[in-house]
Amino acid sequence: MPTYIQISDSKSPVTDYAIERDVFRVGSGTSCELQIPGIDSHAMTVQYKRGQYVVFNRGSQPVVTGRERILPAQSGRWLPHEDLQIGADVTLRLQDATPGTRSETSHAQAGPAAECGESNAKRRQKLIVLAGAVIVAIVILGPFGGNAPSSAGASPECGKLIEDLGGLIAKDPAQHELIDLRSVLQEARNSEIRRDLQNASKSYELARKRIDEVRLPEHLKIRLLRFLRSHIEQVTSSSP
Image 1 (cartoon, rainbow, N blue to C red):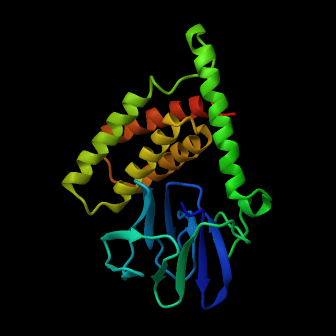
Image 2: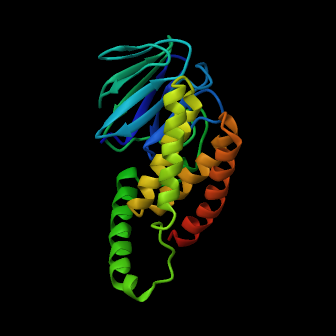
Image 3: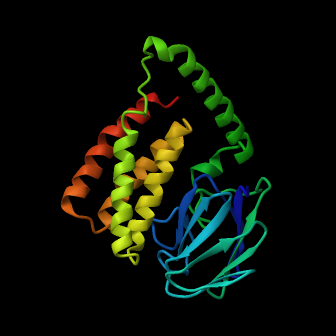
């Protein structure tokens, strides 16, 4: 699985963006995880699922990969080591080696990840080891009622919320912000099931921030906010 994106811009030096989420947005807007000046405020959403990356074109112009031309409101695959063209000046490439320069927010701004000397691969190794330790602790302490809160009680409600969002998407597939919200919530739930609580907490928090960007029935919005408000506290308190 590629670990970073190489960003080439005719107006700027080549830089890298470390991939640390299953779903992230690309654009010039401040709400995007990967911010690139000079393109649409939300040019595309990238999602990793079933072992491959899928690009959802959210912008006003086509996105071109080595295999296909992805028109606005359409989606397509993005393969490792394949160039993806946004506009006339920006080219992105999926890479699977440790990047030399890392940026969490954009290739024009220094983010928190730039201050960290650890490679993405080392972080993943630590998370795997940590996840193994958590599973062992659950097996040993579970029958005796360990203190760490379990996600099992909240997962059904999260699953129902994801299902309800899917129903709205089926009625109006053009609601891109709604699709993004559902994808982020799904990523958070999957991370929690894997006991990757750090990523689950970040994704739940991101979902809460994006609720205001989406047109939702009032009763569903209240359910989402109530669930996220309480569940973020539970996941954060149990995260190592």
